[in-house]
Image (cartoon, one colour):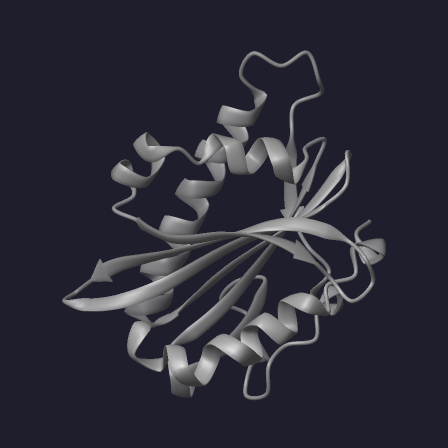
Length: 167
């Protein structure tokens, strides 16, 4: 699907930029990216695993939850790397930033953006949950006109994240 390809392309371009940004000027190991265990979260009803990317897809809502594990990184530094220059390059408009605490007590940060694609407005939630060594990255995209229906179930799904399942 054209939507999946565009979302995946933007997602991976954003990931490469974030990893390089976090690694620059750092004496730490180079961050490593791999697919996260999809069992780390309980997806919202109507979201199923997909072979198009690592995560969950809701075809009927044109919504996706892409999941990565970032090793040798932490969510605080990653979120700091998402500055105005990054948002301008990726044509993202920041809506909100929030602190996250999951039901299992893990901490993280969430950023909510809007962006335009083919004349449609979408929401992109970039969620980073983790500790000093490992971070779960959820990249969630859905049409803005479905915000009323999808926001609460997606937030509830984020709350189920259990980083103990990161390998």
